[in-house]
Image (cartoon, rainbow, N blue to C red; front, side, top):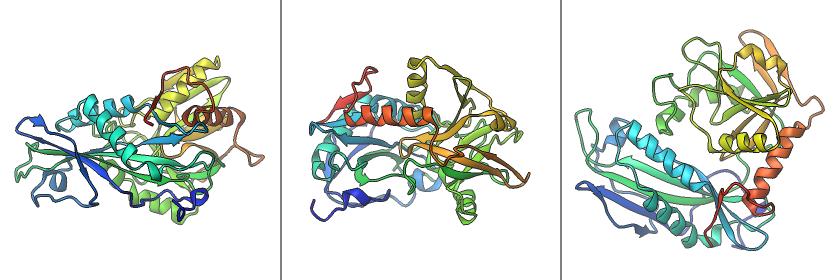
Length: 339
């Protein structure tokens, strides 16, 4: 791919050669189909368009120094999509179909997998939508599962550098007993206004508080939040937080390092006691946080005062990316080889 600037890849869509699709009809999944079209034909009364029956996942494939292509914790993505599908009453792709789809589309688009050493990866986007027509509010009888890929660079343009974020008290991402724990598009649509406010004020993203009481930390924009103090890794526990596979991985790294791990409600006041804080997710891996500004209360929490990420966040980032890229032995069973 001579025309791709691998070193300066943005985190945005780029056309690749193929995607894969599979339909659920008459109570069963069909055969996987390969397509070179970027478009889908859909009934105007499809439930995904009217009632939000839509779910997606995000995972990455990496080319190692040895030339082999690795995919990270795809089984957890498959399980999360099944959990989401169950939560909003969709037909769930079985693990075998999920694996066939992502492995097939990665292999078909091998020429778009960034070379080793550029800090880039192949982003894999599984998508599940209600494609059946319904006018009443009810689950569809037909579903489309598809997977496309695109090469991407860092999610935050700063890369692995501390970012500034703001606490959002005027908007909520999701309600505690709603769809916050599911990876559905509506949760992200609900975040767009507050993200625009943050960007206009010069912040990278928003930090949401719990929708019920505004007392506890929820998510950090499109990512999970974590804080570190007293050799303890702390992350919020809430029914409105998406269970991040990256966060799960960081908790395991923390335990292996001999740290205590606490998943619990985190009062916003506790921000003043953390030694390091960050946001984590598939797209960004870890975004260390330099400053959190609570604009409405005129309060600022500062970290990374030397301008560099904290030592534990740096260690976790380096370890996780080394495992993903094949530079460090995977002792957790997180990696599968695609090519």
